[in-house]
Length: 293
Ligand SMILES: [Zn+2]
Picture 1 (tube, rainbow, N blue to C red):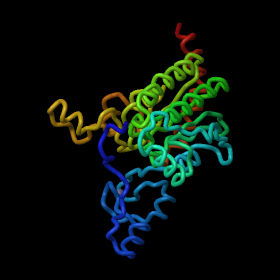
Picture 2: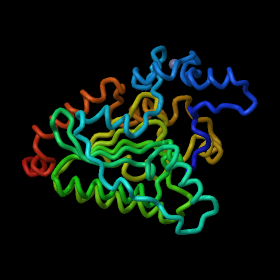
Picture 3: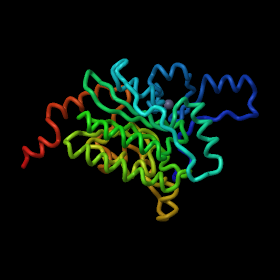
Picture 4: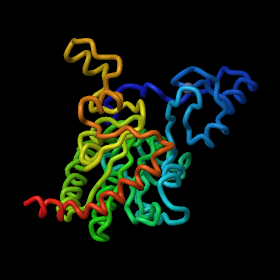
């Protein structure tokens, strides 16, 4: 269930009352959420969806993200066609699933698979916020769990790229069960001495933050991403206190030890490749622990 309100940086909607010219303008150009500059959509894609003026990181689709983090043509997707079912008979859920499958060309809110970066093999799962706010239902949980289990079997590290409003309310407690299932798979991956990395992108909330997004051996975040469990407004109303302006930003979390590093998207490929190399050279976690003992 997306338990935070509207994302602070939700994409711009086009009003039905706008003229045709306005509609075309808002299709090609839009206002930056970070600095209010007018940005051209096409130009922004070439800049990895980063505002050239304020460096605000706009969301990326799962496949764009994979292209950024994998060697060309190395990515092989797994469980591509796994789809959610409306087991609770939630009103309107079937229609929403169909509409999202059509508009995003994805079967659910996560894309998983294996490939290489600078010839180093690893497993990757990337959540896509366009699919129902990347809420975690049974398919998202199952695909992530299978990716981790397969990474354990293949003896390779894993990278989980998160963006989510939280657990999927249309699947009730089945969604919540995914937290324990994916965490258990990660524990087995870790027992084998294999590293797992998390990349938290804007926004990461709810059950995803409370499970696999917080379990990485190295937790990376993109600049100014909003990351939390419940949203700031809910917390403020509950504890009846004013929260700092930068509350739940990557920078705030890094300052308080919940995030290890903040990495600019333009540096991500290089930095992640170095991290993989470092863990490989340092030996598996198992070996390091044995050496310490
Ligand atoms: Zn900007």
